[in-house]
Length: 216
Length: 216
Image (cartoon, each protein chain N blue to C red):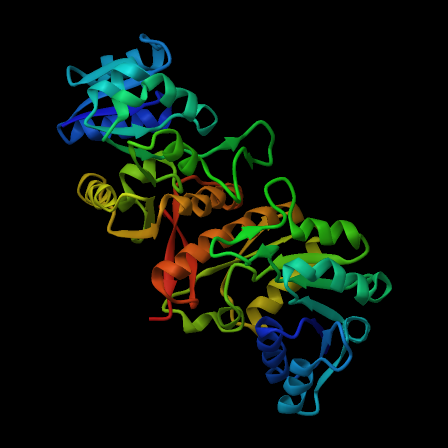
């Protein structure tokens, strides 16, 4: 499959590399066509790893991963272009974080979310929010954790969510996937990221996740 | 021990009843001296269950639980009176929720929290935020869940937090308690409550909690 990965940071590289391992062709999109981290990544990963602009990657991909920083996601997606995203599934892993101080804050929250803003800006794209509650290494290899933990999907398109659930399960190895509901449930998972940050500081590790435990 | 429980809703009644089982004397505080739910609760619970105003309960308690709705916590604590709270531990279980619509929102979040607002309003009181991430039944009986799950403490006073950790462990049975840091980490646990709400809807149960799973 041809997959577009928007963003050349740790998340984009980790997801892109995992997709290549699975045999897909991956184009990493950046603001500039020859973004040094993207070029270096593609060189290391071989012939099925491509790079280009956000627009190139969106046009290339049958499915698109948004791995840009939340603070620049909307701009990156505008550069990708609505026409190149139209009718496609956009797997949104981003968080609207302001990390300029020790106490992280969100640039959007409470009565709106980045997931919703993206869906509103691109109504003909099927936005599915997921994976934003874990570190990149956990995203693509949840089995490294000591127990099965949970990941969530939020989105308005039922079929798109079903496809993303299969991707999470078959490509990345997630076994416990909870459908939270419509894209508006992005608020909860994005706002959780402040607790994630507190936990990271408390346990001095980014490799963790939450498991939902019930009373049976 | 004499304990003041502010609030006569489900949380106040559940915590109050558990404290009575443990042999403590509990005064439930309300806006009005003879608040019907508090009167009914005290009648059912017997001689060690008392009721009165917020001020009466705060004056009575050596330790105070804030179990009022977050939307009225500051007002309730003002009625309790700074002098009656001075030097005491205030265990704050509240969340600043607006539940007037299906999509819950917070009345305070992101760059502030109810925990911090309470601590600022009562600088001579030792505020410890905890238990706000679970339903009342789970608060006092976490062993009912299928596995050990995590609860968090946030607060500026180290000794007060240590006391609260002992209370959580010895009185309520919590085994996995994470100290998130200062009272400003209330933001994360309060903002988590939107995900909690989405999870409650997704799994159709309020009796659940999260377990932090690491890579070992």
